Length: 352
Image (tube, rainbow, N blue to C red):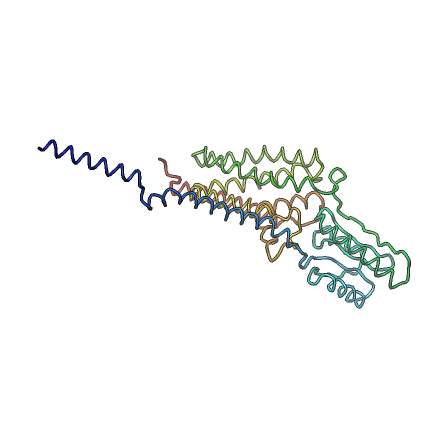
């Protein structure tokens, strides 16, 4: 009897399990399809955010307080010219008046202004395409408009205002496309070192060593391509290599330090900050003043923005101040080193 009872119970259990297998509960259905929905929703959100960050600044770019100089024979004429330009592009320019063309030229070479409009006996527009080709083209367009206005006002059939480029791009890369395209590898180098160092290396001293060694070797290669081969950079080879090496080390140590402290979340956060946010806001293609709001200024506080700005100053503006760009890179390097040392002090990451 006991054996028969056990047999009947086993048969009942097997039948119940068979019924559950044939007719899964709604809760099981939900658990089956929930990850699918989460992945699809996550991808949609991430792609939308990335597209917005990359496309919005470019699609809505307009000059805001773009610093340019004016050299004119009288304050009244200067005010009249400023009024005409503000009428055509409200809020686009921040004007600085200079008494002579030489003073305006010095201000351009020191990166205080992007260009200048000289209205005197010999009208002229001064630009610096090495600072930003887009702004130089904008000032070229202004020279055409100014030529038309002066021609109409003076009754001259053809008055052409010459444009002088005080800091031209190199003849081998006259449009500055090499540095624009090279900006992506500049930031990717540091990210790759940081990610691989986080995955493969356990000791803090190994991570410091790989940031330094990879920064040196990669920077020499990158600058050799951009400077010696393509001619996109035209400054001192060793100084430009130092800039790239410090930037790579700063990004790499920040990624490794954040990953050691916060794991995958730290890695994703720093990667998103430096690449997804920092790359489109770096000011490579557009001047910081062309971005909406304060995004351009924010981009200059990240490693790639400071690095590209510093490389341009070294290449094309020998008299420009570089202290703020160096400070930005060194601060990020300090942050990365501090994160690594903090993780070591806390015994992170924990050994399994």
